Each structure stands twice: as C-alpha cells, then as structure tokens.
Length: 166
View (cartoon, rainbow, N blue to C red):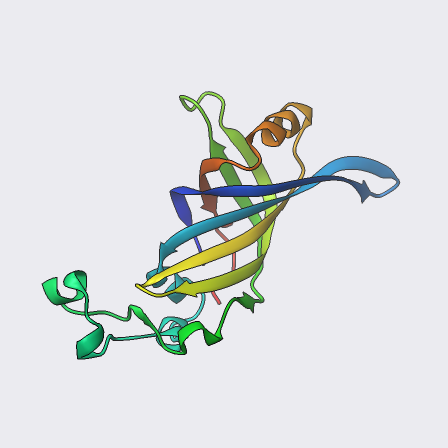
C-alpha cells in the first residue's frame, strides 16, 4: 500500500464543499496533489506497471547518467503516445499531513480517502503522480489550506494499518 513520508509536491487545487452526515451538513473538501517522483513508485501500485511504461535505453540513446551506472528502465516504451493513465486505486481511512512551518502548525487530516490517481510517465525515468485527498477539515485547517493552494507543499500519507494489500 502506498505510503509517503515528507514528500514534496504541488498543492494544485482546494475544493471545499458541504457533506451530509445523516441530516447534518459538515465541511468537506477535496485536495488535488501532484508530485514528480522516480518511476519506482509505480511498483507500489502494480509490480509490472513500471516495465509496461518504461524500457532500457538503446545504446544510441544513453546519456551520461546511463553510462555512469547500470542503465535502468528510464526511456518511454511508447514514446509520447501515452499522455496520462488513470489508476483505479483507493486508500480509505488514511492519515494525510501537510507539514507546515516548524511542525507545530502541521495540518493533520485523519480518516481521509485518497483516490483519483493518474500517472504521467516522463522520459528519463520520472513519473508525475496526481491524486485527490477527500477530507473533512475544520475551520482553521480550511483557512490554512486555502492559503497554501497553488504552491509547493511537504506532505506525508500514512495508510490505515488494517488496510488490505492489493
């Protein structure tokens, strides 16, 4: 199950909305997060996903990094024919923390649902992973989230301990 510790990413959108919990309306929100990471993260979703999207470089495609060590799966298998792919994967009951300031002001969101994953493979061995965090921030957290939207954030994602492995 995907777990991220102090990952850097972009907080691209904050969508506050009311949620019905029985007859009562409570604050809810969707956070859209995007991060550019090594294509090794694809193994967290499915073991063959990385080799499906990436291949080893041909001898005429090697750059200095490839020549310095053992070449890995760093070249796009299908070139630019695949833009983004969606991945049906939900993490229900996760803890999502946006690390802010010295740690005393972290935004800690519990019992979130993380879904809406998309992968955008990039030549060189990186992948842009985008996902949604469905949460219920309080008034203070909502205000802070609003001011952080559109910028770079540091965050952690901890799946629930009893979550089934996929």
